[in-house]
Image 1: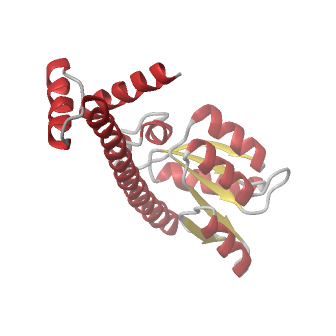
Image 2: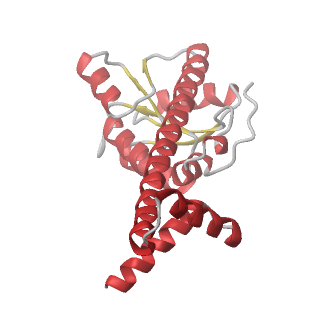
Length: 218
């Protein structure tokens, strides 16, 4: 049985905030899509017996996208061949727009499908029929891969932010050097003192300096 404190929208919230800690330790709400009713019913039953809440099943890719938009599942399990929109096409939209990780399942093991899934960020690929125990393992592995992905993404974004902040601070510092005709260390001390006095971050003060310069030059 899966125990999870996940709430609707946690995956979406992470993608908006860039904070991995918003993600639950385990997924709880899984969207299911398959155009074969008997297969979909069997998978839904297996997932529910494993302790997951099942959204759907959707009968085609477009319906799956609509359910993803309205119900914000933690993860989606999609058949690869469906009407209106394939599982791969739906997966790409779900991940790009909502940050929803996807497991693809199919009766086909064509290398083309596997490679396509990898390129658009599929986190697991299962061949039908899917036994319940295999389903449990696949979901756990896919979620672990997804957690690793979002943590790495957050770390990369944090690094980019730090580099961008450093660039802004440097620009503000040299602007003060030019305007005040003072040395670089003194200009930095002025920025730091202003940050302490106004209880703002150094980059916020630096942005204020640059905005003022832009306003005057404009």
